[in-house]
Length: 586
Image (tube, rainbow, N blue to C red; front, side):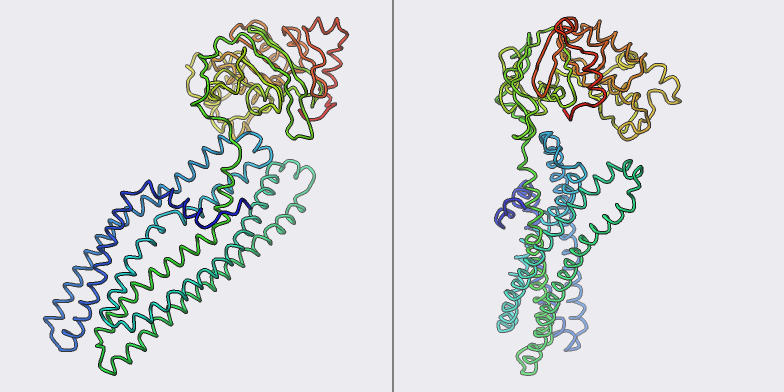
């Protein structure tokens, strides 16, 4: 998994997450220094409480020292609350920043990443890894580091009481750290296996939900239940290993604390019987030892989490190594540098999702401003691939796409896509109202929304809905028919003010009346500089300035509808073959 990040790289990652909180960390350090000083002073007053007050029967001294200890306690609580406010802010902001960074990266990833990875897997891995990273790269790490002050304070207190007993405490520290390292290494391997099993289950679960209609129609529920049990048995097996390792680690830590506490009591009792240590001194010593033991346990715990969570670090960091779209705006041209666009050129373009299978081969053509062009061919001939390259969803393997003489990859991507309005056969609808799906960027006026809806004849349909434009469409338009979904998506595309209209089987689910209305719009509109259409509708092809015929990823003919007929191309037969599904995927 990943590139095998080393511990120093992980700690570098933690440092990068925490360095923006410098001022807050300084406040935490200062408060910890004050808390440590109070922690050193309080046991000394406790010692005097026993030796000079209780054992000598001096009630005034008992009361005096209790008041002092209570005052220190209240002061400590106030300082700890200030410290808590800093911890709370850091613990709240770090997960937000991690999630924000992952979300931004998810939007910047090339579309090819999502061909090989399900959305459910991406979501599951992102939240899982973010959760583990937040448990390490948070205020607990700061608390661990500043706990060194407590250890130093505890050591000073121990030395004041009895330096020999201090040596016993020091001897326990390396044993505790070795045990922590041993269990962390074990848990890291187990955690890596658990991540792998969870990822496999996530991919299976996503595929199952996406194919739920198939499962119902083919009565595959029993089979899917068995697959679920098999996946979960593997996950539970790894969870069981983790639980046993955590329990064994806890027993070992408790054992160390037990040995240290009662070892100190035994040694303290020995010194008391020899008259070299008072009861108050023993009380103070045990208090100081707690200043050392608790931070030691905290350090061991955080170190253990860092080491055992390394698989999450590796997966999280490898996610950010996936290729993203080119969003570098500093060295790119803006639209004003290339406007006006007089022609769009494909120059010897090759493309394929893999090196072995080429979807497009030596594609060359020019489209001039004002032209409306269409692409036809059997399924898998490369029609949609041409549009995907034009939209810069993918990049050519060879060749160039030009606006005039300028390679489109030299133009800022965000500005470039502002030129386009796109509609595909499987356009996505948001789980929102019809109105908000049409006005997706919240930039259209009520009149513009109405005009876009009228082009696809939504007016009559909306009149029959109780909530009209405010009707909720459901997840990806699940409450609508296929034709209704496409009409709303097309209205959205037509509402956008742009230079280039791209339509990929935009009317596949339209009834005849709606389709004729839209064809009339395409025939007469002069709103766009360029129109690119993939369609198997004969009526709209007749109104195209040029039609490109593709076969096996190559352009075999081009011309107007009548020119192709004159060349002997049977367009009607070709469209019938395409509609009947003779071919493979674009």
